[in-house]
Each structure stands twice: as C-alpha cells, then as structure tokens.
Image (cartoon, rainbow, N blue to C red):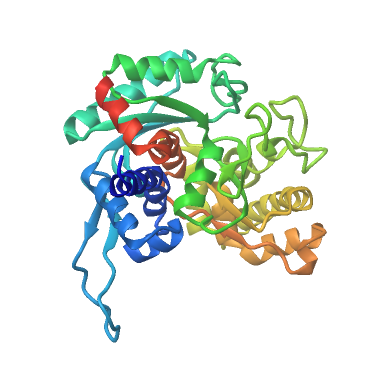
Amino acid sequence: MNGKATTIKTRLERGRSALGPALELVHTGRAPTRAVLTAELGVTRATAGAVAAELEALGLIQVDSRPGAAAGSQGRPSHRLAVNDSGPVVLAAQIHADGYRAALVGLGGRIVATAPGRKTVAPDPAQVIGSVVEAGAVLLRESGRRCVGAGLAVPSAVAEPEGTALNPLHLAWPAGSPVREIFAEQVRAAGLAGPAFAGNDVNLAALAEHRHGAGRGAQHLLCVATGHRGVGGALVIDGRLHTGSSGLALEVGHLTVNPDGRPCYCGGRGCLDVETDPLAFLNAAGRTPGPEVSLLQQSRELLRGQYDDPGIRGAGEELIDRLGLGLAGLVNILNPDRIILGGLHRELLDADPERLRAVVADRSLWGRSGGVPILPCTLDHNSLVGAAELAWQPVLDDPLAALAGSKATS
C-alpha cells in the first residue's frame, strides 16, 4: 500500500472511531456546530467534516452547510449540527404504581409520541410489560419510523447483571422478577428491532437530566425524586451512573428521617420513602386520596393552587423539613456539586425554596461553607427519556455496528 493510500485509510479509521463520540456530542447538545465538534474531538476540520457527513448519511444528524450569520459577526459561520428529527427512534416504556406509559424517543432526548395507560398494575409483570410494549408497537406502526432498541424504567432496584427487579415495593410483583428478560421477550414478540434494556426509574431520570436537563455540566450530580409512590435517588459521576457493585446503590428512600414515623415497606420506620412521598403529603394535609387522579397529581395540584391554606402549608413544611434532613445526610456522605429534585420533591422546592435550602445548609457539614445548588428537574417524563438513553447507548458507542445490527433484526 502506497503512502497516500495509507494516509487515507488512517484518516478513515480515525474518523470512524470518532463517530460515537461525535454523535454523543450532538445528542447532548454540546456540539451545535462543526467548529465546536472539531475542537471537542481534537481532530482536523476535514476529519470532523467527514465524521459529520457519515452521521448524516446514517440518518442520525442533519448538517446545515449554509447557516445564517449572527448579527455583527464576521467571517463565514460554521456548519450547524442537529439531530435528525426524522431519524430512527427507540421505544421507551415506564411502569409505575398507577399504570404505564410508552413513548417513541429520538436522539437529543426528544419525545416523538406517547401513549399513557392508567390502570391497576397486574401482579403478573409479564402482563403489564406486554401491554406497554404493545402500546409502543402501535405508536411505532403509526409513525413509520425505524426502531433501533428499547428501554424500560421500573420503580425498583434492578440487580445487575441479571436484570431482576429486587424490590418492587409499590407493585404487587414478586421480588426478583426478571423484568429485563420479560421485556426483551415482549419486544421480540412484537417484532421490534434492536436490544432491550431495563433500569430503575430514578436512576434513568438522573441520567436523562444529566444529558439533557437540569443536571447538564454537573460532575457529581445527586438526584432525589418521588414517583407516584415512594422515593428514589441516583448519583451521576463524570457522566456515568453510580450503581454500585450490583446495580443497587443509592436506595436513598430508606434513610431514616423520623425515627418515630410510619412503618416502611423495607421493615424500618420513618424512612424518606414513607415520610416524603405523595401519600405522606396527602395524609399530613388531611386529604383523602381520590380514585380518579393519581396521588402525585393530586399532591401537585394542592401545592400549586392551595399553598396559602394553613393545612396545606403545614403539610408542605413538615415534608420539606424531613426531606431537607435526608438531603443533608446525603450531602455529608456524597459531597455532590448539584442536587436536582423530581416528582413531589420538585413541587416542594418550588413551594418554599428558602425553607428547604436553609434546612439542608443548617444540617449539613458542607452546606454552611456555601451550600450545594438545589434545582428542580426540568424534563417532562425524564424516566422515559432515561429509558431511551439505555437503548440509544449502543448507537452512541458504535453507530455503524448498532445500526447494522438493528437492520439485520428488523
């Protein structure tokens, strides 16, 4: 092979090895232009251009080679890069205490279509997982889009590498249900292409927020959130979920914040899980949970519309104080550089941010030296978006291999 051919081959190999990193930069919004992509990848402009062209040919991104110049700018503007709004999608599914939701999610964390289903969750996980997959398959047929994978979020710790839901406390499922295996079987049975994954709903919410929402730029991101029932937590360190040795880390819902409080499903008493979730708020406010509206939605409406009511305010302050105590303990242990709150906890933060931040600062060692930013989650359906991130990850790792594999199975 002559020198020129060797140079071309080396440039091609370098470009292909950069496809995944380049796609992740566009996917997370960190490379809006080819100039930024060139700098972030540390390659030549020609190589960055070739990489962008390859990703565009794969149908993953769009390249605008003639963008308008900003007012007052000089020189030729760089090519603009964006995810392809008409490109492939993944099936994302979430199961919670009040039912399920299926969605199609494109690159960039963009939800293309959703199908909610509110019903009593069957004690047989295969039954409800089958229902949510079928709902997603209907969305996919209606969209005409290509599916490259599927991800499932469940309200339970998911053990690795088995993919079993160890403690679905707020579902009537058997402990140790093989949710990933069931989900993969249902995905294949529905004729959907690509690999299937499953994970804990709050872990996935944190991953989505770190890539696309309130957690962008954080190095040590702590997420604490309520679902429709219970409380979960997650930690993202340098862009990676910290899941522990077997996927079970950050079960923060079982921190004790009220030793004389309510019995918890874990066998303890006064845990965050039963002291700061929507049911705890409704009980503290003296409200009876309504059958037609989810506990989370009912609590949210009270906090947003009736916080001037002394009973609602008192219940909110009671939960804020307990949540703040739990967050302070986590700050002492984990030393995060940002905390984001989801579900009912986001509503509590919005209702009285000064009180929550004061409790955390007063009860944590590091809070008194400047405090940790505490922010609300910003993504709608962040657990769904996080489930999609699981399914997109093989494509982000190796676009050529992943798309060839999903095409072969479709």
